[in-house]
Image 1 (cartoon, one colour):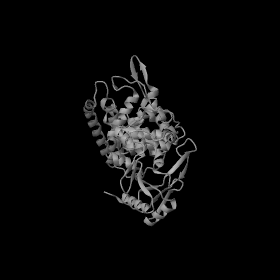
Image 2 (cartoon, one colour; image 1 turned 30 degrees about the vertical axis):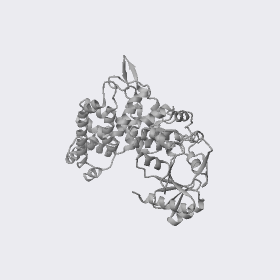
Image 3 (cartoon, one colour; image 1 turned 180 degrees about the vertical axis):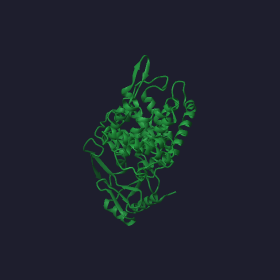
Image 4 (cartoon, helix red, strand yellow; image 1 turned 90 degrees about the vertical axis):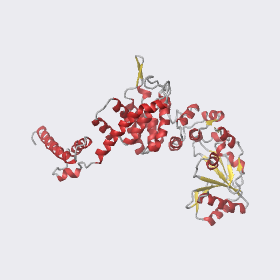
Length: 467
């Protein structure tokens, strides 16, 4: 069934055909149609008419938008439809945007397709007839589950394609052709902008069933060191075989990522949650120690915080994201440890209160535990073993939420009780909050807090010589 965007694409194509040209669906839209995947990003490419002719056609169909004059990309207001013209590119530098672009409406379909990154993205489908043009074996590569570059020279001119190959492999469960791996291994990715890396990483983390494939492919390409050195340093870092039968910290992190992908639909902040799964054990790379045939990584949850911060600062400036991931990195061991050590209710309440997102913290704790599968331990056994821990954590979280939902002492309550703002004010509110965590009623919180204030005022007067 056509939506308004595909209907408009047909209207554009019909008018273009009357002017002697042809219009094609291009890129990911064709690929995903053949793979049976939904794709709402519709791109069409118009061949065989001049720029001014296309502009005139679009002006008869609605309010024309120009999204990139030099790139020959247009659109229509109220439609999610990118309308492009064939173009050729010449690299002028090492970055993703360092190109001179030339619009050429009469370039020809094969040459236009040759500038695409991978054969599966070089497919073109006539909007009116449905005919598919496949100049580079894209359909065969998709049938084989293979990602293969189209043109060695043009591919090497855009280093972002290294990361696109990795995220496509993760999203589609495809392998990357040997020749594409070899070419990608030779490319310099240092000049790319961090936000571009973040875009490809985000797609892998949120759209792939197994995001670990993204990193496995980059490892195979030897392209982890520039943008993901903290991840690369996890390779061959040993772990206790008793607690981690799966192997080194890299293997554990990859398994945790894939477990987190199973849970991300439940997360309050799916992207932040997935990044936390990636970063949670960064500290093991510098704290792991082997002594008396035992492997330890004491304090890795705290040591990993600055490492995670360095990594995140490389690819994003979003303060909220950083705060969430650093908080999760610091706390990721606490939930499961609290249960196994039979911690007090007070300890559970303090843990939840210090968490940026308690619900997601429990999801991370679950992924961390289930990401320890190897040797004689299979996943189903790990899931069964974790059920009691998960149940206990959910019960404690429900208690925390219940206590947080009750009335509590606020600043205005202290003022109404005659307390004047002073250096004690914030300390008094913190004192009241501890009682709130303990489940004490608001009236008792206020009474005890006022008593505490009077006592502290007296103590401080004495310390100041009775002033």
